[in-house]
Length: 265
Length: 261
Ligand SMILES: Nc1ncnc2c1ncn2[C@@H]1O[C@H](COP(=O)(O)OP(=O)(O)O)[C@@H](O)[C@H]1O
Ligand SMILES: [Mg+2]
Image (cartoon, chains in turn yellow, green):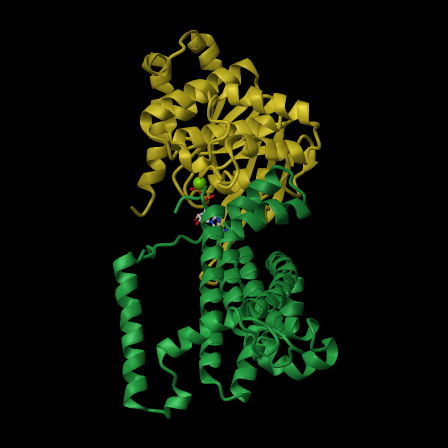
């Protein structure tokens, strides 16, 4: 059972000598093998929430647990796919994926098997010995995802992983991620500000308010997806054409619009 | 990651020739107008002739090559010692705050002492053979190597360290496999400055050398009031210094070949 739970989690930061509240009493449970997406206006604290689950940041109040244990440091049981990839530029594709496996103390044959498997899974064959700067943004992000998957983590934390990609690449990546998620469901916390992406990928979508970031509402997408059998369509544009999809998307849009109306800009 | 925006200017043969000719022209001119007695200001051809003569006749007990070899031996010892101590210490100081706090005040006080100031103690503690001179060269090369390793470690993009901790990389591996490679641009800059300062400390180091070395050659040339020998020694030091820098630049290029510039 790998669950992520946020219990009354708040996080303040200091700015210009004053403390301000970035995340305000968030309570949320991402259930075992559930794919939860958080959407919200930029600066609402999405990244901060994800970093608290990763152990890269800590709550000023409340508690974050993963698989029942309080999060006190980062670790390979909670693989992170960072927004800016964060691949090691001096390591090849294979070496980047292998790095975490070495730390796990796996033997060489096992490591090679896992690296090869994930390279194939992410369509990176032929690029094993390439260095990150020789790859396009989309391919670099695939390496980052392969690196995370290779750890075989209890939970996956993804922070706008497709945010830096061009539209065509992003669609391909989204379709691939859906395939992987349905084939081998994992507990995923996925951050995005793209509403389409959230509805297409997630079982539930959490909408956050702008500053301070609170949970505004949570929508059950999976119930609709299963009822309307979205997964019979393999292409994202076919799913996005469905009335049930459009309906959900519009609802989220409206909810987010209210947040922007309350904003300064 | 430090990015180099300054494009290195590659001089062509023509420019090199013009530059060299201009240098010798000015030298002849200054020598001929006689700002110093001719005995103390040798002409270029005298110096070059002496330089050539020194390659096959002995002065101060050895030929120029033998003096150079002996200098390079001391230099390699001092420079390597500076790397072996300065590089890991700098990286560790960049990683562990407490070490930084302990070492930095001491280091800041010591690094302003010119390498030659160590001459008396170097001789007393480590003798005049290889030990003493090695310490002087070490004193020249060590500070920039340590400072640059430290700065490199401090300046590492925190995302790399976060990625490493997320992957479960241990503390030692993080230093050797993340901090070190990420700091290489800065480390190499430190090696280049340190190599230069170490080589520049050579004459000071060989003030106490027992019987060999280019610095020793210069000192003996001075006592013999043989200015062509002094200048020939200076030219040899300058030339070897250039070679050392070229080698390190090649190394830098090689190590950074996989980084985006
Ligand atoms: N380490 C930090 N120090 C100070 N302020 C921070 C820090 N991290 C995030 N913040 C602030 O907290 C707020 C939420 O940031 P973030 O979680 O990155 O938002 P999002 O990912 O939703 O765009 C922003 O106002 C941001 O400036
Ligand atoms: Mg963010």
